[in-house]
Amino acid sequence: MASPSPRGGVRLLLCAAMAMAGCGDAETASPEAAVTSEAVDTAPPVSAETASAETELASAAPDEVPDRPLLGALDYATTIYAKPSDKSARLGYLRVGAKVPRSEEPVSKRGCKGGWYQIEPQGFVCVGKSATLDMDDPLLRAASVRPHRDRPMPYRYGFVRSVLPLYLRVPTAQQQHKSEFKLGDHLEWFREHKEEIQSADLGAYDVAVDAQGRALPGKALGELGRDKNSSEMSLGELFGGHSDDDPWPFWLRDGERLIPNISGFDVPDYAVFADRARRHTGLAFVGTFNTDEHYLGRRFAITTDLRLAPTSKVKPDSGSPWHGVELGDDWPLPIAFVARRGAQSYLIEDGEARSAKPLKRRSVHKLTGKVHRVDGEKYVQLEGGRWAKKDMLALVLTPSKWPRPAKKNEKWVQVNIGEQTLTLWEGKKPVFATMVSTGRPQFGDWKETTAS
Image (cartoon, rainbow, N blue to C red; front, top):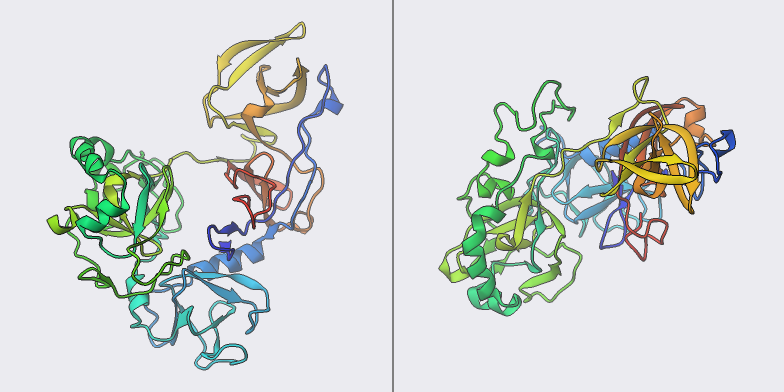
């Protein structure tokens, strides 16, 4: 689960950032030159109890809870506090549209006119601009599509192909031409290439999983049984809808928007759009609808913050089916993922590194623990005797110092910012590892950059 952060991003709550130092320097492999790890800039790891509670907070959004009073989230990220005070610790957030069981009466009204309500499984939320007790609130109804927790991916996704406005209302033809540079040229090109750019390959969304989200053994990619896979879906379904002919949402009527802008990008009420999405931006969708000639006949996809993306500028995407590796007897630490394209394995003889074989990007390899330096370049040894350049790999290492959850034999999560890897641990036993992307600035200030 993520914790609230300033607009423009969500900071990962997995703050167990174990930054590892690189391999030791040596001309020949020796115990001193073994692959080691040092805890640098380390934040407290997330224990099993904390992670469990946080996960429950994130998922406590039932569509209907009979005979129970509910609280609904109205902000894109409605904060949950540890106590009925905005000065207390933040436990997490509720995504807009979430509904959770609450106390019958407010536990306090101090600093909150609408009252602080205790919610399940834990925490307190202030009723007001960010939360409501009215289950018929238009914004709550508009955000009624919840994440799919029984599927590999919670939403349908797409990547922006060309800079686009994120519209707040359905724009007329005139408004679109005013908002989008050389739109006529784009639409002409789109009509000629629509089929090739608006299909989706099989991906993460097409992995068969059980109700808990675990991959089912023996199932091929795309073998989903009753559900359609990405190659079988209509365009409307690829953009988060039920069909190609879904109706307009109730909150868009005659060019007007009947709900507030919750994107965090503040604009005047008369504004047609709120910010633009740049090329290669990933967007998550909860619905889609088509328009007639008055609106240039374009399809719009509804984002999770209830803005509209013209789909002629979006390529639907099903996510990468790549995943990490379960650790154990077959895969003991240390291991390495090939993180970059163009990686090679090498033979090192007489102080020279000679290219041997290419290494497939994202492939995983066992390490011997030995390192070597040739012409200032650091190499690590793969099982089998060949070597690979350290800067082409993402290493998964045993910590040189154990955090408290490991010593108490608890479950905990290790995020190595330097290596860009994530490892799940049970005490001092590693059980799973994968690569992550925590933000390009890595150790930069997350308040000022995209670092985590």
